[in-house]
Image (cartoon, rainbow, N blue to C red):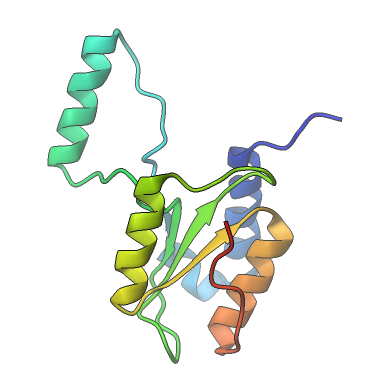
Amino acid sequence: MRKKTESATQIGCVLWFRMTYRPIANLLISIPNGSRLAGTQGQRAAQWARLKREGAKSGAPDLVLFVPSIHHHGLMIEMKTKTGRQTENQSRFQEAATARGYAYCVCRSLEDFQRVVRNYLIGTPYDIAYA
C-alpha cells in the first residue's frame, strides 16, 4: 500500500470540510507556500522573491479557517504526514499566531482534522498542536 502524502490528506480534509460545513465552506483556505515553482533555479528564485513581496511567508500554515470561536480569532492548520515534523519557521509562526489569539494545530490525518475542526467550532477543548 502506498504511503499517503500530505497533499492527498489535505485534499481529503478540504473536501470533507466543504461537504460538511457548506455555509462556511469558503472560509477555509489554503496557503500554498509549499508549491513547486517552475523553471530554472534562477527563475524559481525570482518567482519566490515576487511571491514574498506579494505576502507569502515561509512557515505559514497550510490551511486557515476564518471563523472565530469562543476563545480564538480563527484556526490555523499545519498538515503533516505521520512522521513529518514542523520546520523552525513553522514553529515560530505557530508561536506568533497563538500569542495573538489564534488557534493552531498540526493534523496528520483526516480523523485528526475532523476532530479538531468539530471541537473548534463547538468551542470544546482539542489538541491545539503536537509535533
